[in-house]
Length: 149
Image 1 (cartoon, helix red, strand yellow):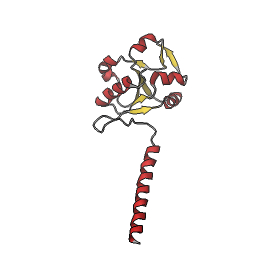
Image 2 (image 1 turned 90 degrees about the vertical axis):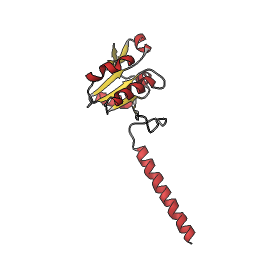
Image 3 (image 1 turned 45 degrees about the vertical axis):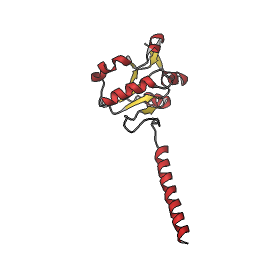
């Protein structure tokens, strides 16, 4: 009888812990990649739909276009975005507000350029930094608002 009681208690404890962890995970609005180690700064992502919604509500968001060579061949950018060449980001740090949400985007299939830019910002004290999940291609896929460069 004791063994059954102990077993039932252990199962209930495991289920409680698992459901608590699941609830925390399912309540996350911003995604984090699973390949980030504990020693790295955690990169936060924002979806193209969430960014479009924030912009439609006229929320204050700084959008940085950090595309590489694809920028030169394109005639448009996300409406309101500021172009910052990846190699020049450190020169622009002092002109960016640290108290506003900043979203970086590139056209890399893995969002690599955006992630690097976001990490540079976070290493320099910026707190509200997000990578646009899917970047330029994701924005175009949902027909997000663009403007001529």
